[in-house]
Length: 385
Image 1 (cartoon, rainbow, N blue to C red):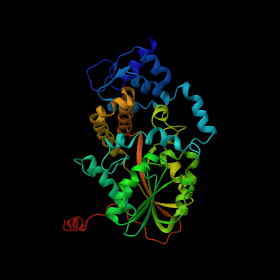
Image 2: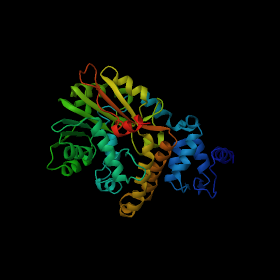
Image 3: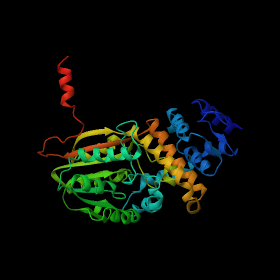
Image 4: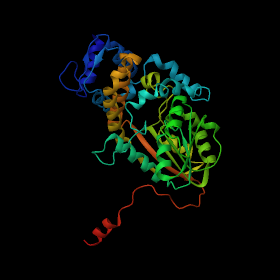
């Protein structure tokens, strides 16, 4: 009874009822829910949803309200995860030996599965809703074009894509900017798809750890991969990018990040979605880059991830009947909780998406283009007032 009272009071303080009529209200289906959440905190909340102990019409809004309570640090990690927390402090969870774990458990789930809810270029990262009425396809095209323009891609450029996913950006850059691309990945499922997807284009794919990279490139990009690098390896990652970038080149890093440094990622996300993941803070990222790069621009696209995740979830729900027999209903609850909880976290501005545009220190090149300049017609309009 004490656990139930405490959880209900906590939820009520942010406008979430239990068995109420509002979309953000929780409907408790198993009374063990209360003790489990009180004991295991965010891990218990996610696991009990996977087990069917509660439901909610708008998980995204429920999570956003809980995070806005600003008590997240008090309820994030239970005693059950203390050994794992100590492990992250004492060892390197993202060593070369452990790097493939996330590829095997997440990215290799199946190309057909991811293709069912992603856009045709299979962009599994934040889209750019430059206009509110953009479709997911349009927003992902806008994201890729924004990245290519920030890189100042030119015909004949050699572009290195670290963590190239299914090869979508490589295909887009080769098709529309005329550059030659080398994509690097450790997910064999993704690489198998990417090679067929980019057949006939000047694109090569290499299966290797980023730490083994060599060669020289005009431009370097990394999208949605830095979250798997780990704080012990940030400087190494920047060293690799520096040695592979031409003196007058441009490096674009696109990464989810936290507002401040933490000991580890959310326990539920770590256990079920992204093993060994870690969200860098701005200070951690720029500190690692300081010896090598000039930070030309830092652009926060965080608010665009909320509609991206909501679009993915809508498509996932529509496609689910095709995958029920393969993955099972507990997987469905896990996956929808992941997409909707992350949407809520971005909505609450608890996590962000940064694009960092960098050049090598000592570069003689002019500052690269980063933001869209004001059209001359607008300036002329102001001048006539």
